[in-house]
Image (tube, rainbow, N blue to C red; front, side, top):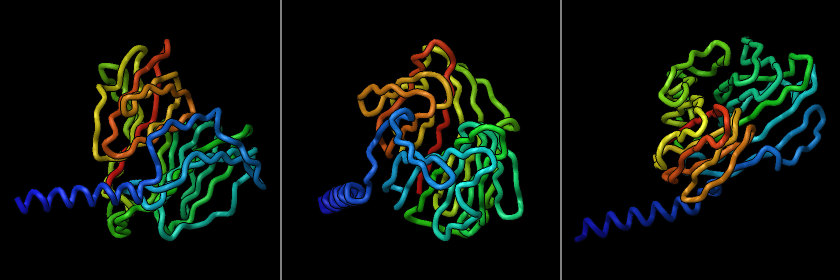
Length: 257
């Protein structure tokens, strides 16, 4: 009986801690509803900011740059990681002494302490997503051993066919802030469902690239379109349905402590 009461106490305490520290609820952030704010050299759209079960700080925004412009000089972060995802246009991303020209769908992952910068290297406007976060149980040595900072070009990644479309794997590794961070894209044929509503311990972001979908989130059906960002906390029932007439495609990335 004492063991049962002890387990219940731990469960209740953990639930209360989660309620106290998690400020981000499951939601679909619509691109068309984001407020554009003009800054010195860019237009910024704030998407979300808060904390989660795994992250003491989590922030997502987008920046839009005119040709030849940069949002700020190269810089470093001492205690957070950064993930850049190119939405449209062509950018030049530099991490340390390595630079790469990247187009839509390409990413850059930056470890704490690594100097990095981005600029519009194309002839038209460029827009990209920025995800910055701090883990609740950071381990900088773990991140270095897992491979450090890197960049991935969308055009160089292979696709693997599935029964409902295809999948493109980006990475699945430990980082300085997380015990596991996995990222891929899924292409889903019309009238297909990603899977039955399910849950998992990992928190997740879904970023719609093309097509119109309906998100099933904790019993609610919410439409989402290209550019929209979906946040799914740990253990929230969810699924994705392609409700368009053509194939859809979306990023999905999951993480845990």
